[in-house]
Length: 165
Image (tube, one colour):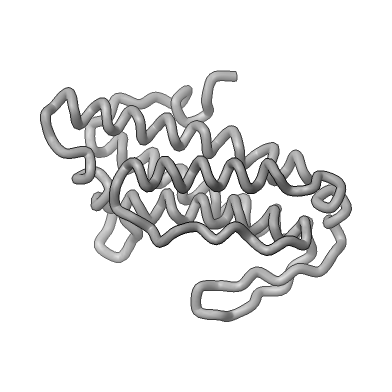
């Protein structure tokens, strides 16, 4: 369970951070403010890049915290600036790496409740939380962030998404 959560989220959060760095480099090379990238969205009713990063971090923080029976780290209000997003990613990584491995590994059959932003609680076991909700949500938001940057002309390839293994 630890490997399927923390072990999965951490490297992809690092990859997401590197994607944002490439976005900044792209903007600087073309002499525009990188903040412009953060407002991009694929469709009018979708989250923008900043919100995609924010949601990826939220799922990476909340799921392992629920598995470890800990309160999730309180992430600061979402800022539409690259430094703020990088800090959010770093805080997320630091928090989930600090969670007790044994508690997470013991959580497969434990009942957990994921609270949506509107207050609705969704019931899961630890395993179903990861496999059917949090991991898919996390990758949806990371992939969408990659797609937004790629659509903006940032020179990215699959290896940037997957990381250097």
